[in-house]
Image 1 (cartoon, rainbow, N blue to C red):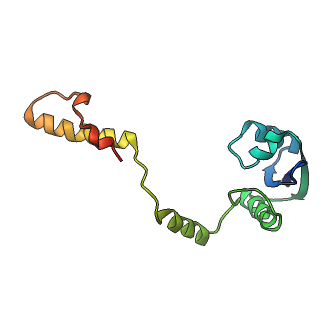
Image 2: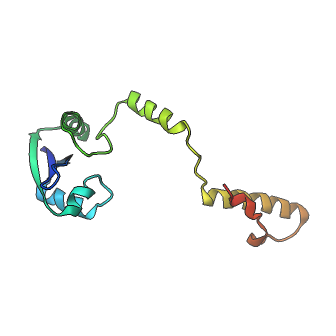
Image 3: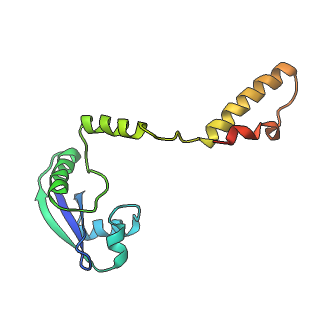
Amino acid sequence: MGKIYKIVCNITGEVYVGSCNNQTLLHRLRRHKRQLDCSSKQIIQRGNYRIELIEEIDNKTKDELLWRERYWFERIDCINILRPIVTREEEKQKGKEYAVGRRPRTNYLSVVRTAYRRSWSFNKYLGTGLCLLDIDPTLFEG
């Protein structure tokens, strides 16, 4: 049995919409309190809120529950940042949006591995040992 719920701030009226499967709303609320990287964080940190059941559904899969949560997500003015579930078209569009004007992330470990491989190959050719201090520090500038 799935549940769609909302956490409402009694001070500002802000609403967070969520769902849970096979757990009580009190148990889910406890998880929200520990998981402060969620958009419900700003409501919970104020300390004056309530959790309300919007709907109980007899779902067979998690996706069914998420689509029903999406239904409420689109109809309630909520502070949720992420959609509960997305279509393939939305996923493709999201990829395009991220690609435009995005600065590529420098993966430190990848740079070190690449530098190590290049130095190792070069040192193997010369017959010398590798010292990580010999890696060119300009490789890490980005």
